[in-house]
Length: 347
Picture 1 (tube, rainbow, N blue to C red):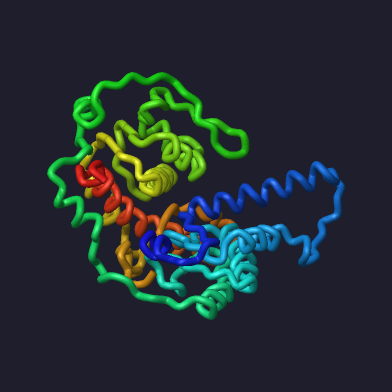
Picture 2: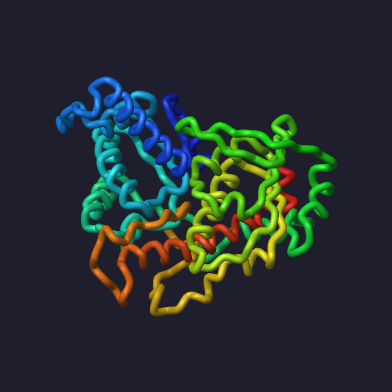
């Protein structure tokens, strides 16, 4: 994607990670709603006319700013995102904005098995109508893992204290408690950080047991070049919320090109309990993060109560979320391998 984007001759172009893009869309829609409330108060009448559709306004603004929009790691795992994208993509395509995206899922597998899938399925047909699907790479080949195996050292430690390896990678440093601004006027506190040297240190529980999402993790990636993550725990579907947050964290740090130092209970290949999932829970879906086609990314909790249909005693939305989480486990492990390799530090 980076190679394609850099060589495009178009002047009005934008390349964005899908997490960042969808987060910015939510933020913009929130701002529009707040402006409307400020102007008309809570008694205003909802205007359903096409010209006042907030999503269309956002799409028009994007179309004015760029003729080419590149998504890295396009994915759909949340019903709210799915419904927003349906309208947004429709308006982008009608404005002749060229959309190019990378994904580890073919078009028809996007949001596969998600709750209220039937409301989004026509959007897949629209994407197929305006986009051409191209298979890239070799199925099952993990370039990140192969690259990491060529590395002569790594910044990942099993057991012990993370401090035992920090000095070897960043030298001596002192940090203090700092506050990092994130969207909607919120702040994230780092107990030990040096904004000048752009080094931040965090506990795994501190980042993954709280109600954090991509906005918080993106702020970390934007403010620090080196992130020290202490005491990473082994994850399974039983602690799926913690697992999802960790996967989102890794995605955002990877996108920010952050150098990662961490210690964990077990080796990277054992961090995610993928193979412990019973077949009658998951089914036979392919969970390779390198399926031929076109990504996976953050998997958000799906509100299973929105769809009352059952499958094997479990909500269909819940099953879809579990499948995506298992898939994301594979990819997160691959990224961890690369991010803690000496070759990553040398780039």
